[in-house]
Length: 132
Image (cartoon, rainbow, N blue to C red):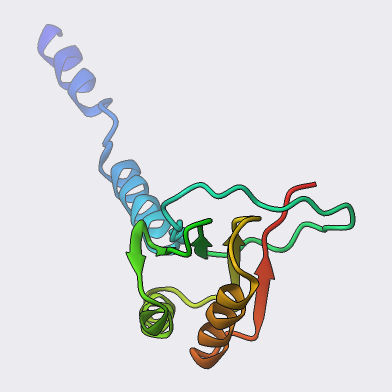
């Protein structure tokens, strides 16, 4: 009788394999569908605006500091390289919005040149970041 009871306890074990399969499939799904934000890499003192509105989330940020330096993806780039960098970022993740973070002391002409480079890369929706 003791042998029979021992045999029944072995059969009552729960198989964890299907649950682990589901967990791994969900992990792969979340890794594949995650979008990564390409931060500019520096903090800028954005100009204030009373009538600014929140724009939908963007994945590409371009920062221009008060010294006229352009930063993308945590590194400094020349104005001639903005288009190529935006095209590279678009190949990595598709987006239709780019946020330009211009310092309030940066030159307006440089911000316009950056926006022209972004438009040349194929992005039509460009947002200039401000503070309320």
